[in-house]
Amino acid sequence: MATMKRIFILLGSLDRRIIFFIVGLSVLIPLLKPDWVNLPIRPRPESQIVFNEINKLNEGDKILLSFDYGPSTKPEIHPMSIAILKHLFAKNIQVYGFALWPDGNFMSTEAFSEVSHDYGKEYGIDYVNLGYKPGAEAVVKGIAADIRALYTVDLKGTPIDDIPMMKDVVNVENFDFVFSLSAGFPGSTEWVQYACDPKNIPLSTGVTSIQVTDILPYVENGQIRGILAGMPGAAEYESLVEVELKEMELSVKPGKASSMMAAQSIAHVVIVLFIIFGNITYYITRKNKGKDKI
Image (cartoon, rainbow, N blue to C red; front, side, top):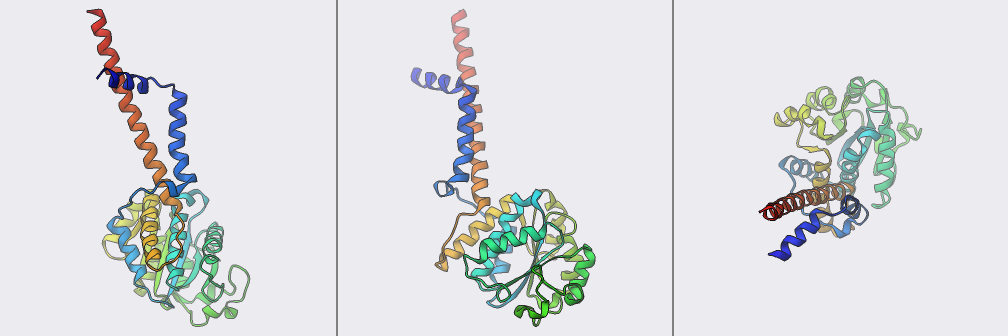
């Protein structure tokens, strides 16, 4: 008992610089060495629905993937785009990139270049990036009606008619699925209101944590099929895709959202433990001082 008291007193009286160092390590190790920390992730029903909907798509199906976010929300949403592209490319689904945000051009280019090489996908055959057009909801309405009225060239400047996978694509009705990676306006709401709901095209979305409450009514009404909510949603989708890729005997790299959630979880546990040790130490030392006075 005396030994345990000495241990708690020692832990509770550690120099704050040592505590900061330990907390720092608890954050850095999962980020730098994600293979060392493999915490279990239990997907929520909303994330599972998104995965199931995309997993139902067949080889050769077409999906419209809209990059409606920028650098400020990249940590939350970009891991979703990477995991979704891995899932789509593994299933040999044709991906059509669009953007309602100007910064979406940079996000989509980075995501496509990161994933397409690993899966041996060819531009214009397996995926295309049409990029950003100004106009917010007007662009969504244009895509719903006639894509060629808005887009004459892709993001690289290649004429639409020269891209093989654009041959039979006229409007949103030619897509089997729509997915919006949304950080606000314009984004998921506009895709629901002006394209997917009127044309009866299935839609799922991934959003920032702060945007979830605005989108949930559409999810509950069935207008949006599931939702990936912030970084936890990205980590959940990464875990589902990881299992799927292993079953397909494909190589799997740890996802960034999973490592960031692991770092956050471990850091929280370490901080709580130090708080507990500090309180126990305070109680023991206070009790000892009371005995000394007697």
